[in-house]
Length: 229
Image (cartoon, rainbow, N blue to C red; front, side, top):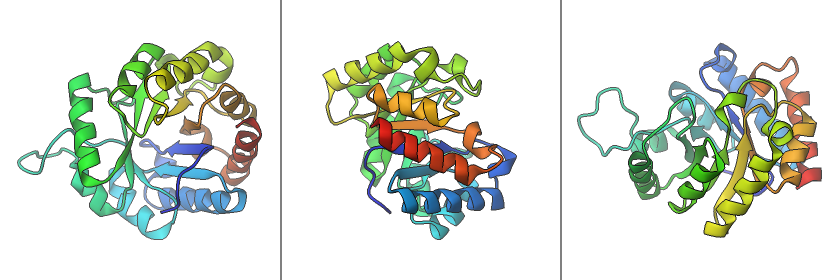
């Protein structure tokens, strides 16, 4: 796995059909190619069933979209941290707005993630939550106002104060926790503004997965991210 350093672009494949099975492989290989050409750190987050295939075929970091706060045992249908690690994941998303967890569950999930040697990017719906999560010392915190997710209206443009305040508040708690932003990031300008506001990474999904030319789109994001950092 390549070392992750800012600027970092995290691509969440969600459950989009375009990013399922062979689609996940195609989009991950494009991401690997663009990362190699631009030097920008790119993470892909495929569905659980695609983690092994994707991680076997690309050299960029592969994250799970979630892990459950459980230990090995009788947990039918749950996602064990050890399982995604064994499948080839190097990290995981946690507490996405589409899969929210209680704070106590986030805390235990993080302890399990650390125990098995994964890293976690934990999502927050506002600045206050982002600041609270920083006390748990995850690898990264991503602020994502849920009302902007998938709208094409970027948080960096529509609510820049959310981004800058998240950076400020998280760094007050821990300089070591990386700060990301997401929700509506869909153009190179959105990415540029986000990094100018102080983030170290961005998180996006549909803008990449559903792009007519994912490679050109991702290259434009990388170039803008480097300029904005």
